[in-house]
Picture (cartoon, rainbow, N blue to C red):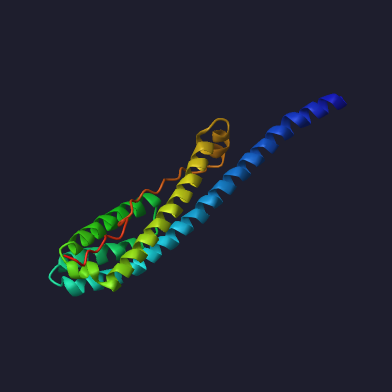
Length: 187
């Protein structure tokens, strides 16, 4: 009789303990994802703060390129206001990156602007911010990868299904600028 109770207790407690451990692991991974997303969000906000200064500096040299400036600012504002799903934010961020690339392509037509120290400082700040965004993105995506692996692997996928742990999206955005161009004052 005592042996039957021990066997019954083991058959009930071991699976219950395993489920509790798996559940807690999912909670830990979910919290890592939230924390790492806040790092990405902080760096994106830093980029949003730099963009108006960058646009204002370029605008001083290329005032007739109004459409490019308006598009960059419009996308910057849309990205700053978007706190929705990661996929939506990634879509908006990709559009912003494309518009920033057009802005930097425009800069190529203005040698005086490329040599302007204020512009170069802003561009270097943006490069540093882009590097920080990419590092935060990699950390976030690493946490998402770990969560997805656990969520999709057997037998932990049973716990994920029982407690409705939702899928999580990766965040993929290329940098808007990678390096400060060399300025040749001899030409």
